[in-house]
Image (cartoon, rainbow, N blue to C red):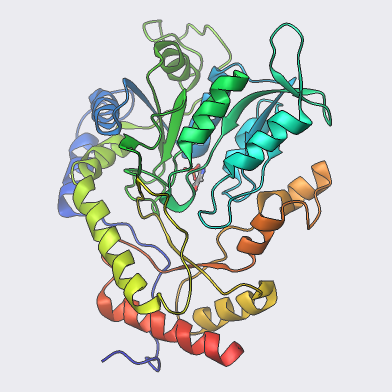
Length: 397
Ligand SMILES: Cc1ncc(COP(=O)(O)O)c(C=O)c1O
C-alpha cells in the first residue's frame, strides 16, 4: 500500500508519452533531405484538419504564434479591442497586444472557470456604444472598436459556445477559439476549435499530444488559411519563389521533424485521451470529498489537459501556497494554475490593473492547484499525491 512517508519519491507535474514508434517516425525524417516545408508538414496539416473537423489546418511553431496569426489574419489592429478571459495562460491576451489591439477582460463563470457569457453580454449591451457606419460596439473607456471574442477552453472544458456565437453574430464580432488546452473536447457534438472563424491548438510537451514545440490553426475559411500560411512563412505566397515576399511575415514554421512526431501522436489520440480520462476519473474517486474540480457544461465533452483542484471557498492564497509548498516538499510536482493575467507585472504596469478588478478570477486563482497529470500516471502515484494532499490540507486547516 502507498503511504505518505515514501522517501525520495518525485512525481513530475507532467510527462510526455513518447513511444518507439514516435521515435522511428522522427528518425525517418532525419534520414531525408526534407527537414522543413516537406511532405510531413502537409500530411500533419491534412490529418489534423480531418481529426478536428475543419477544412484547413496551418501548422506553426507554437500555440502563441498560432494565436498571433489568427488575430492578424482577421485584420485586428490598433483601433481595435478583443474580449477575452483573465483566467488563462498569458499568451491568449498577449496575442492581441502583438497587433497593438487591446484585450478587454471579462470575468469568468465560477463553476466552469471559463469566460462568463452573461458578463460579455452585459459589457456589450450596457457599456458599449455603437460605431456609426459599421455598427460595431465601441468601448467608451478606450474608444476602441470591439472586433472579436477570444474564448479560452480552460483546462480542456469547452466554453459556452452557443451563447458566445450568438452574441458574436448579433454584434458582428469574429470568434477566435483558444483551444490550446482542449484537443478533442466537444461542445454539443462539435469539436472545440471549429466553431469560430479560427481555432488554435498547442503542442508543448505538457499538452494532450506533443510535437516538442508547436501549434496549429484550424479554419473553414480559405482566405484565413492562405493568409496564415503566408504569414508563418516570411510572407511568401503559397506558390511564390523563396525570395518573393508579398507581405510582412514571420518565421513561425513547424519543421517536418516536429510534424512527424505530431502525425505519430495524432495517430493514437483516442487512446491518449482515454488514458487521461481514466487518470482523472481515478483522482476524482479518491479526492471528490476533499476538493472540487471545474464543472463541464451539460452536453459537452471535456478533454483532460491538466488535473486542477480547487480548495474550499475562503482558502486564500497564503494557505494555498502552504499546500503547494507541502506538496513540493514531498516531491510532488504542482503549480498554481492560473495566476490571473491582469495581475501579472506587465499588465499591472502597462494598464494599471489592481486586485479586485476581476473578483471571480481572483478568487478561483487563489484556490486552484494543478496536480501531477499525464497519460501513464500510475495508481500508486495517484494515491500518493491524493493522500499527501489530504494530509497537508488537514494539517493547515
Ligand atoms: C490557454 C493557452 N493558450 C495559449 C498557449 C500557448 O501555447 P504555446 O506554449 O505553445 O505557445 C497555451 C500553452 O500553454 C495555453 O495553455
